Length: 421
Ligand code: HGY
Ligand code: MN
Ligand code: MN
Image (cartoon, rainbow, N blue to C red; front, side):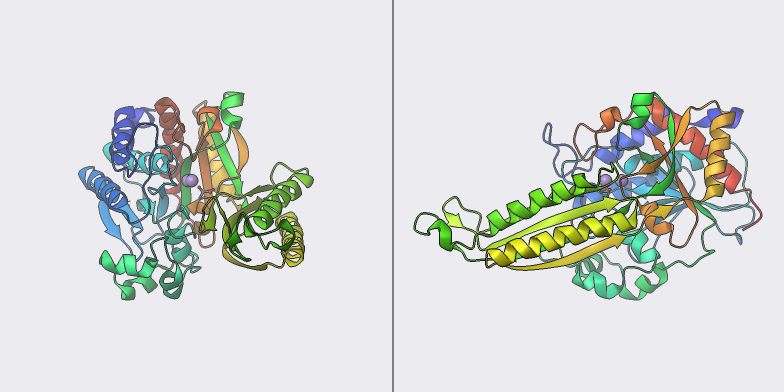
């Protein structure tokens, strides 16, 4: 089928490498760092907006910075079909997590436009604001606001490590408070959402499959714990009278690992990735320590049981040590089940195009998780080398991205020609 051959590996390569130039850690081996609303991320946003305009898409932005590149359909009154992902990264990331879904969406729309066909529904390539929780500790901020799960008051509370709130940062960039309320979407506003993403685990590569059809995204909860003990002298303070918050934290962290393993389920994962010790000196017993807990499980009940055990253990340890503990939950996203209809469309396309595939779940969180609150979604995974991600060594083959984009193209084309809501 001529049109399917329209996917350009050159465009995909050029755009991914073009985005990657906007990087706060360009030094050799340091990977890519592009935090939301940083100068680098603004540069990457501007770059992709110019690419969208160049290929003839109409570019708009909403009150929290979600960007839409639209290819108008013959029946613009019908709810549009979306495809997209995120352009911000974690610290020292690779160049494919998120960005692959953006360039695939833009290239699919370009190929549909250049094929001369005009589907009925408008197609929108979407760049969601701040999928990663790196800067403001809460993630999927753009899609969360769309889902009505992030208020402007939340934006006035979310603060980065320099004490700048999300609201202040948005104001400094010219986003107006009165536009924030228009971000919210309701059921029926979007006909379908299809996000292409690297798999971020090793199953497709191990089985030599070209595409993963994602039927569910795991439950994903992120918290910060704060321990207050007694700052003291490392040499003059006997072990028996210490209220050492680092030792308490160490016990809690190893308990979180043990309790996650004890479920015997590979879906249960607990991670402590961010630790702040004050004042962080070799000869001071710290009386003020904070640490994150990222706890995920496809089964919400299991996730809550593990959380309960971690909290009980932490309360016991801190009580015995005379340490005060507090904690806050930044987000607590429920599992997102994909649309059976969209899954079947993707599967049909794979069958017809002889693309090898398997159904799978996602242990990573994605904007689609929040979009699923107001629209049917499904995801297309492509393999990444050894499943590595959130690491400068993250890598995907351009040929694999092209194959995934071909499946995305045909899926979007079919969804955009569906009359029925
Ligand atoms: O952590 C995740 O799953 C995503 O990268 N925010
Ligand atoms: Mn990520
Ligand atoms: Mn991602």
